[in-house]
Structure formats: C-alpha cells, structure tokens
Length: 165
Image (tube, helix red, strand yellow):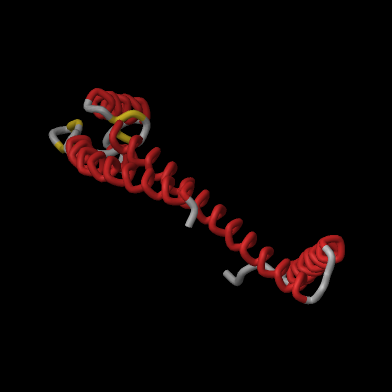
C-alpha cells in the first residue's frame, strides 16, 4: 500500500472522528428545531404539512396559510435552521461528501497500483519469452484495444427496454 493511500486513510479517520461529534450536535439541534411550533386556533402545528392540513380542511384561507408558514419558518430560522438543515447538519453533510470523495480517490489509487503491478508482471513474462520492449508495447496496445472492443460489445448487447412498472 502506498504512503499516499495511508495518508488519505488517516485523513478519513480524523474527519470521521470530527463528523461523529457534529452528528451528536446535529441531533440535538434537530430535536430543538422539531419542538418549534405555531398555534392555529389553539392547536400546535410543527410543520408546513400541519398548517396545510388546516388550509385543506378550509379552517384557514390561503393567505393565512402562507402567513403561518412564514411565521413557522422564521421561528425555525431563528433557532438555527437555514433551508432544511441546521448548521451542524450541513457540516456533517460536507464531511460525508469529503470522506466519500477520499474513498473514491483511494479506490482509484489502488486500481492504478494493481494495474502497474500487473503491467510489471506482463513485462517480466515478456522478457522471459525474449520479447523486446517495442514488441511488448505493441502487445499491450493490442490487448488494450481488444478489451475496449469487448467492453463495447457488452454495452451494445445490454437490454434497452424500460423496467417493468
């Protein structure tokens, strides 16, 4: 395993530790946000759906519905929700995206390492068989083109019908 992969794995481990702390904080923030409500005719409404139910049942007008939704959203924003996420939820989301990207980078590096090892093994075999470097490069190119051709045939033969409903 290369030093670069080891370093990336260490970075992931550190980010995961920090992310776990923010997950705890995000859970608390979400609980606080979920406890926010407005009242309509003495009834607590915790979400836009609750408010829209009042409108659908013709207890409030469209204008009143919009007013109540705005009021609820302002209360949630004041409590720390921006858009649909709290600040800590945003941090968790960012850290998750970063670790996902790092895992992809590690997978790519491992693949390249494996390809290089296989290439060195093929070169060793070619040398044992008495191939020159130019002949070996030619064989590598033919092999690469053959793999691409096989992959294109697989792609062509894949069914294109839609999934059943």
